[in-house]
Image (cartoon, rainbow, N blue to C red):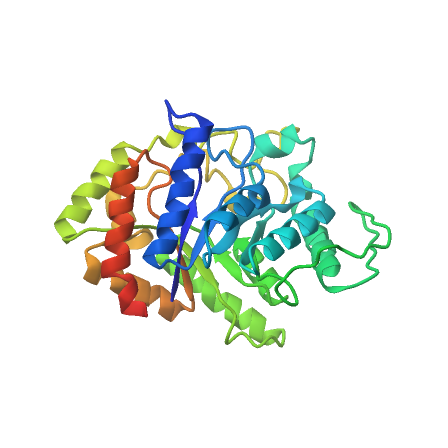
Amino acid sequence: MKFSTFNLFHRFDGMSVREVYDYNLELAEYVEELGFDGFWIAEHHFRDYGVVPCTPALLSYIAARTERLRLGTGIVVLPLHNPVHIAEQIAQLDVLSGGRVDFGIGRGYQSVEFESFGLDLAEARDRFNEGLEVIQGLWTQDDFSHEGPYYNTGTINLVPKPEQKPHPPVYVAAVSPETVELYAARGLPILADPAAPFKKVGRAAEAWHAAASAAGHDDADIELVVTRAVYVAPTVEQARADQERFEKLFDRSRIFNAQSAPIDSATGQVAKGFEYWQDRYLKGGSVDNDFRWEQLEVIGDPERVISQIRMLQEFGYSQLMCDFGSTRPVPLDEMKKTLRFFAKEVIPAFR
Protein backbone atom coordinates (compact mmCIF):
# COMPACT_ATOMS: atom_id res chain seq x y z
CA MET A 1 0.00 0.00 0.00
CA LYS A 2 1.24 3.45 -0.95
CA PHE A 3 0.33 6.57 0.99
CA SER A 4 -0.18 10.05 -0.39
CA THR A 5 -1.89 13.20 0.81
CA PHE A 6 -4.79 15.13 -0.69
CA ASN A 7 -4.39 18.90 -0.51
CA LEU A 8 -7.37 21.09 -1.30
CA PHE A 9 -5.64 24.46 -0.70
CA HIS A 10 -8.85 25.74 0.87
CA ARG A 11 -8.73 29.38 1.98
CA PHE A 12 -10.22 29.91 5.41
CA ASP A 13 -11.39 33.23 6.84
CA GLY A 14 -8.51 35.51 7.66
CA MET A 15 -6.02 33.81 5.33
CA SER A 16 -4.47 35.32 2.23
CA VAL A 17 -3.94 33.16 -0.84
CA ARG A 18 -0.20 33.42 -0.28
CA GLU A 19 -0.62 32.06 3.25
CA VAL A 20 -2.61 29.11 1.85
CA TYR A 21 0.20 28.37 -0.59
CA ASP A 22 2.95 28.70 2.03
CA TYR A 23 1.11 26.38 4.44
CA ASN A 24 0.67 23.63 1.85
CA LEU A 25 4.10 24.00 0.30
CA GLU A 26 5.68 23.42 3.69
CA LEU A 27 3.53 20.31 4.05
CA ALA A 28 4.75 19.01 0.68
CA GLU A 29 8.34 19.10 1.87
CA TYR A 30 7.35 17.60 5.21
CA VAL A 31 5.41 14.61 3.83
CA GLU A 32 8.40 13.75 1.64
CA GLU A 33 10.62 13.86 4.72
CA LEU A 34 8.20 11.56 6.56
CA GLY A 35 8.22 8.94 3.80
CA PHE A 36 4.85 9.50 2.12
CA ASP A 37 4.75 8.48 -1.53
CA GLY A 38 2.76 11.29 -3.13
CA PHE A 39 1.22 14.75 -2.87
CA TRP A 40 -2.01 15.44 -4.81
CA ILE A 41 -3.51 18.89 -5.32
CA ALA A 42 -6.99 19.93 -6.37
CA GLU A 43 -8.06 22.27 -9.15
CA HIS A 44 -10.88 24.71 -8.46
CA HIS A 45 -11.95 28.10 -9.77
CA PHE A 46 -13.62 31.29 -8.52
CA ARG A 47 -14.12 30.23 -4.88
CA ASP A 48 -12.21 29.85 -1.63
CA TYR A 49 -12.93 26.11 -1.92
CA GLY A 50 -9.44 25.47 -3.28
CA VAL A 51 -7.37 28.33 -4.67
CA VAL A 52 -5.29 26.44 -7.25
CA PRO A 53 -6.65 27.13 -10.74
CA CYS A 54 -3.57 25.68 -12.50
CA THR A 55 -2.25 22.46 -11.01
CA PRO A 56 0.69 21.91 -13.43
CA ALA A 57 2.16 25.32 -12.57
CA LEU A 58 1.99 24.78 -8.81
CA LEU A 59 3.28 21.21 -9.06
CA SER A 60 6.25 22.49 -11.07
CA TYR A 61 7.11 24.68 -8.11
CA ILE A 62 6.72 21.74 -5.73
CA ALA A 63 8.89 19.59 -8.03
CA ALA A 64 11.76 22.03 -7.50
CA ARG A 65 11.37 21.76 -3.71
CA THR A 66 11.21 17.95 -3.53
CA GLU A 67 13.24 15.04 -4.83
CA ARG A 68 11.26 11.80 -4.87
CA LEU A 69 7.62 12.69 -4.00
CA ARG A 70 5.08 11.71 -6.66
CA LEU A 71 3.16 14.77 -7.87
CA GLY A 72 -0.54 14.22 -8.47
CA THR A 73 -3.21 16.31 -10.16
CA GLY A 74 -6.24 15.55 -8.07
CA ILE A 75 -7.83 16.45 -10.43
CA VAL A 76 -7.45 18.37 -13.67
CA VAL A 77 -11.02 19.26 -14.66
CA LEU A 78 -10.44 18.30 -18.26
CA PRO A 79 -13.50 19.85 -19.96
CA LEU A 80 -12.45 23.31 -18.75
CA HIS A 81 -9.20 23.17 -20.75
CA ASN A 82 -7.83 22.87 -24.25
CA PRO A 83 -6.39 19.34 -24.18
CA VAL A 84 -3.37 20.37 -26.26
CA HIS A 85 -2.35 22.82 -23.55
CA ILE A 86 -2.81 20.19 -20.84
CA ALA A 87 -0.76 17.65 -22.81
CA GLU A 88 2.06 20.19 -23.09
CA GLN A 89 1.92 21.32 -19.46
CA ILE A 90 1.85 17.83 -17.96
CA ALA A 91 4.62 16.63 -20.28
CA GLN A 92 6.77 19.60 -19.27
CA LEU A 93 6.07 18.92 -15.59
CA ASP A 94 6.98 15.26 -16.05
CA VAL A 95 10.33 16.19 -17.61
CA LEU A 96 11.13 18.83 -14.96
CA SER A 97 10.26 16.47 -12.10
CA GLY A 98 12.22 13.53 -13.47
CA GLY A 99 9.13 11.48 -14.27
CA ARG A 100 7.18 11.94 -11.03
CA VAL A 101 3.74 12.90 -12.35
CA ASP A 102 0.48 11.08 -11.64
CA PHE A 103 -2.18 12.50 -13.93
CA GLY A 104 -5.54 12.52 -12.18
CA ILE A 105 -8.43 13.77 -14.28
CA GLY A 106 -12.19 14.15 -14.11
CA ARG A 107 -15.09 15.73 -15.92
CA GLY A 108 -15.87 18.11 -13.03
CA TYR A 109 -19.26 18.90 -11.59
CA GLN A 110 -19.38 22.44 -10.21
CA SER A 111 -21.89 24.60 -12.03
CA VAL A 112 -20.12 27.85 -11.16
CA GLU A 113 -16.96 26.70 -12.93
CA PHE A 114 -18.65 25.60 -16.15
CA GLU A 115 -20.92 28.63 -16.35
CA SER A 116 -18.03 31.02 -15.74
CA PHE A 117 -16.05 29.44 -18.57
CA GLY A 118 -19.12 29.56 -20.82
CA LEU A 119 -19.41 25.77 -21.05
CA ASP A 120 -22.42 23.49 -20.91
CA LEU A 121 -22.17 21.09 -17.98
CA ALA A 122 -24.22 18.52 -19.89
CA GLU A 123 -21.33 18.26 -22.38
CA ALA A 124 -18.79 17.47 -19.66
CA ARG A 125 -18.45 13.74 -20.25
CA ASP A 126 -18.20 14.02 -24.04
CA ARG A 127 -15.63 16.81 -23.76
CA PHE A 128 -13.72 14.76 -21.21
CA ASN A 129 -13.60 11.64 -23.40
CA GLU A 130 -12.49 13.55 -26.47
CA GLY A 131 -9.94 15.60 -24.54
CA LEU A 132 -8.37 12.46 -23.08
CA GLU A 133 -8.11 10.94 -26.55
CA VAL A 134 -6.23 14.02 -27.75
CA ILE A 135 -3.85 14.05 -24.78
CA GLN A 136 -2.94 10.37 -25.00
CA GLY A 137 -2.48 10.66 -28.76
CA LEU A 138 -0.14 13.63 -28.41
CA TRP A 139 1.90 11.85 -25.75
CA THR A 140 2.38 8.63 -27.69
CA GLN A 141 2.33 9.51 -31.39
CA ASP A 142 4.30 11.64 -33.79
CA ASP A 143 2.43 13.58 -36.46
CA PHE A 144 -0.74 13.34 -34.42
CA SER A 145 -3.91 15.02 -35.62
CA HIS A 146 -7.47 15.04 -34.40
CA GLU A 147 -10.82 16.27 -35.68
CA GLY A 148 -13.84 15.94 -33.43
CA PRO A 149 -17.00 17.64 -32.19
CA TYR A 150 -15.17 19.81 -29.66
CA TYR A 151 -11.47 19.83 -30.53
CA ASN A 152 -9.57 20.05 -33.79
CA THR A 153 -5.83 20.09 -34.24
CA GLY A 154 -3.43 20.33 -37.08
CA THR A 155 -0.65 17.78 -37.39
CA ILE A 156 1.32 18.04 -34.15
CA ASN A 157 4.58 16.67 -32.78
CA LEU A 158 4.39 17.45 -29.09
CA VAL A 159 7.54 18.97 -27.58
CA PRO A 160 8.43 17.92 -24.99
CA LYS A 161 6.92 14.48 -24.65
CA PRO A 162 6.61 13.05 -21.13
CA GLU A 163 9.57 11.50 -19.35
CA GLN A 164 7.51 8.44 -18.33
CA LYS A 165 6.75 5.98 -21.09
CA PRO A 166 4.36 5.61 -22.71
CA HIS A 167 3.08 8.49 -20.56
CA PRO A 168 2.39 9.40 -16.91
CA PRO A 169 -0.09 7.14 -15.12
CA VAL A 170 -3.65 8.31 -15.79
CA TYR A 171 -6.29 8.07 -13.05
CA VAL A 172 -9.96 8.90 -13.60
CA ALA A 173 -12.05 10.31 -10.75
CA ALA A 174 -14.93 7.87 -10.37
CA VAL A 175 -18.12 8.71 -8.53
CA SER A 176 -20.89 6.85 -10.33
CA PRO A 177 -20.92 3.11 -11.15
CA GLU A 178 -21.24 4.06 -14.82
CA THR A 179 -17.94 5.96 -14.69
CA VAL A 180 -16.12 3.11 -12.95
CA GLU A 181 -17.09 0.55 -15.59
CA LEU A 182 -16.66 2.92 -18.54
CA TYR A 183 -13.01 3.63 -17.81
CA ALA A 184 -12.20 0.17 -16.49
CA ALA A 185 -13.05 -1.07 -19.98
CA ARG A 186 -10.27 1.21 -21.23
CA GLY A 187 -7.85 -0.03 -18.59
CA LEU A 188 -7.75 3.34 -16.82
CA PRO A 189 -7.52 3.10 -13.01
CA ILE A 190 -9.85 5.05 -10.78
CA LEU A 191 -9.59 7.63 -8.04
CA ALA A 192 -12.41 6.33 -5.85
CA ASP A 193 -15.03 8.70 -4.48
CA PRO A 194 -14.00 10.19 -1.09
CA ALA A 195 -17.65 10.65 -0.09
CA ALA A 196 -18.73 7.05 -0.73
CA PRO A 197 -18.92 4.66 2.24
CA PHE A 198 -16.60 1.68 2.52
CA LYS A 199 -19.07 -0.80 1.02
CA LYS A 200 -19.49 1.34 -2.09
CA VAL A 201 -15.77 1.82 -2.72
CA GLY A 202 -15.44 -1.93 -2.23
CA ARG A 203 -18.05 -2.55 -4.91
CA ALA A 204 -16.38 0.02 -7.14
CA ALA A 205 -13.05 -1.82 -6.99
CA GLU A 206 -14.77 -5.15 -7.64
CA ALA A 207 -16.65 -3.69 -10.61
CA TRP A 208 -13.49 -2.07 -11.95
CA HIS A 209 -11.47 -5.29 -11.89
CA ALA A 210 -14.33 -7.27 -13.47
CA ALA A 211 -14.82 -4.77 -16.29
CA ALA A 212 -11.08 -4.38 -16.93
CA SER A 213 -10.57 -8.14 -17.05
CA ALA A 214 -13.57 -8.62 -19.34
CA ALA A 215 -12.08 -6.06 -21.73
CA GLY A 216 -8.83 -8.02 -21.87
CA HIS A 217 -6.68 -5.83 -19.64
CA ASP A 218 -4.10 -7.34 -17.31
CA ASP A 219 -5.33 -5.63 -14.16
CA ALA A 220 -2.99 -7.34 -11.68
CA ASP A 221 -0.44 -4.53 -11.54
CA ILE A 222 -2.74 -1.56 -12.13
CA GLU A 223 -2.93 0.75 -9.12
CA LEU A 224 -6.34 1.87 -7.90
CA VAL A 225 -6.45 4.88 -5.58
CA VAL A 226 -8.98 5.47 -2.82
CA THR A 227 -9.38 8.81 -1.05
CA ARG A 228 -10.46 8.96 2.58
CA ALA A 229 -10.59 11.40 5.45
CA VAL A 230 -7.85 10.03 7.71
CA TYR A 231 -6.98 10.61 11.35
CA VAL A 232 -5.07 8.53 13.88
CA ALA A 233 -4.78 9.26 17.60
CA PRO A 234 -3.07 7.38 20.45
CA THR A 235 -6.41 5.98 21.66
CA VAL A 236 -9.84 5.28 20.22
CA GLU A 237 -11.38 7.55 22.84
CA GLN A 238 -9.22 10.50 21.79
CA ALA A 239 -9.95 9.86 18.12
CA ARG A 240 -13.71 9.95 18.77
CA ALA A 241 -13.41 13.14 20.81
CA ASP A 242 -11.26 14.74 18.14
CA GLN A 243 -13.74 13.76 15.44
CA GLU A 244 -16.46 15.70 17.24
CA ARG A 245 -14.12 18.66 17.62
CA PHE A 246 -13.26 18.55 13.91
CA GLU A 247 -16.93 18.49 12.92
CA LYS A 248 -17.50 21.78 14.73
CA LEU A 249 -14.72 23.36 12.65
CA PHE A 250 -16.22 22.21 9.33
CA ASP A 251 -18.31 24.88 7.61
CA ARG A 252 -20.39 22.73 5.25
CA SER A 253 -22.17 25.69 3.69
CA ARG A 254 -18.94 26.84 2.02
CA ILE A 255 -18.57 23.50 0.27
CA PHE A 256 -22.02 22.03 -0.24
CA ASN A 257 -24.19 24.61 -1.96
CA ALA A 258 -25.86 25.47 -5.27
CA GLN A 259 -22.60 26.69 -6.78
CA SER A 260 -20.94 23.33 -6.27
CA ALA A 261 -23.92 21.23 -7.33
CA PRO A 262 -24.08 20.04 -10.97
CA ILE A 263 -27.11 22.15 -11.87
CA ASP A 264 -27.99 23.10 -15.45
CA SER A 265 -28.66 26.85 -15.29
CA ALA A 266 -31.08 26.66 -18.23
CA THR A 267 -33.41 24.18 -16.52
CA GLY A 268 -32.60 24.53 -12.83
CA GLN A 269 -32.34 20.73 -12.68
CA VAL A 270 -29.41 18.35 -12.34
CA ALA A 271 -27.46 18.47 -15.60
CA LYS A 272 -27.63 15.61 -18.08
CA GLY A 273 -25.21 12.87 -17.15
CA PHE A 274 -25.13 13.82 -13.45
CA GLU A 275 -28.30 12.05 -12.29
CA TYR A 276 -26.26 9.99 -9.83
CA TRP A 277 -25.52 13.23 -7.99
CA GLN A 278 -29.19 14.15 -7.51
CA ASP A 279 -29.46 16.48 -4.51
CA ARG A 280 -26.13 15.22 -3.18
CA TYR A 281 -24.55 18.62 -2.71
CA LEU A 282 -27.73 20.55 -2.01
CA LYS A 283 -28.42 18.26 0.96
CA GLY A 284 -25.28 19.59 2.57
CA GLY A 285 -23.37 16.34 2.72
CA SER A 286 -24.71 15.91 6.24
CA VAL A 287 -23.98 12.59 7.94
CA ASP A 288 -23.73 11.91 11.65
CA ASN A 289 -20.53 11.12 13.50
CA ASP A 290 -21.44 7.45 13.98
CA PHE A 291 -21.87 6.96 10.23
CA ARG A 292 -18.57 8.69 9.54
CA TRP A 293 -16.84 6.61 12.22
CA GLU A 294 -18.16 3.25 11.05
CA GLN A 295 -18.58 3.62 7.30
CA LEU A 296 -16.73 6.58 5.87
CA GLU A 297 -13.50 7.68 7.54
CA VAL A 298 -10.21 5.94 8.28
CA ILE A 299 -10.03 6.97 11.91
CA GLY A 300 -9.12 5.62 15.32
CA ASP A 301 -6.07 4.44 17.17
CA PRO A 302 -3.20 2.88 15.18
CA GLU A 303 -4.60 -0.66 15.44
CA ARG A 304 -8.03 0.36 14.16
CA VAL A 305 -6.64 2.53 11.36
CA ILE A 306 -4.29 -0.22 10.19
CA SER A 307 -7.18 -2.70 10.06
CA GLN A 308 -9.30 -0.26 8.03
CA ILE A 309 -6.48 0.26 5.55
CA ARG A 310 -6.00 -3.50 5.24
CA MET A 311 -9.70 -3.73 4.39
CA LEU A 312 -9.23 -1.18 1.59
CA GLN A 313 -6.21 -3.16 0.42
CA GLU A 314 -8.30 -6.33 0.33
CA PHE A 315 -10.92 -4.49 -1.73
CA GLY A 316 -8.24 -4.03 -4.41
CA TYR A 317 -6.78 -0.59 -3.71
CA SER A 318 -3.03 -0.10 -3.59
CA GLN A 319 -2.82 3.61 -2.77
CA LEU A 320 -4.56 5.53 -0.02
CA MET A 321 -4.85 9.25 -0.66
CA CYS A 322 -5.19 10.70 2.83
CA ASP A 323 -7.15 13.86 3.53
CA PHE A 324 -5.87 14.81 6.96
CA GLY A 325 -8.14 17.83 7.31
CA SER A 326 -8.18 19.98 4.19
CA THR A 327 -11.64 21.41 4.96
CA ARG A 328 -10.98 22.58 8.50
CA PRO A 329 -8.53 25.22 9.77
CA VAL A 330 -5.74 23.18 11.34
CA PRO A 331 -2.67 25.08 12.64
CA LEU A 332 0.50 24.03 10.86
CA ASP A 333 2.14 22.59 13.98
CA GLU A 334 -0.94 20.46 14.74
CA MET A 335 -1.10 19.21 11.15
CA LYS A 336 2.58 18.25 11.25
CA LYS A 337 2.00 16.38 14.49
CA THR A 338 -0.88 14.45 12.89
CA LEU A 339 1.20 13.57 9.85
CA ARG A 340 4.18 12.56 11.97
CA PHE A 341 2.11 10.25 14.18
CA PHE A 342 0.54 8.55 11.14
CA ALA A 343 3.94 8.11 9.51
CA LYS A 344 5.38 6.58 12.67
CA GLU A 345 2.49 4.38 13.79
CA VAL A 346 0.73 3.33 10.58
CA ILE A 347 2.92 3.44 7.47
CA PRO A 348 5.54 0.94 8.79
CA ALA A 349 2.83 -1.75 8.98
CA PHE A 350 2.64 -1.68 5.17
CA ARG A 351 6.35 -1.47 4.35
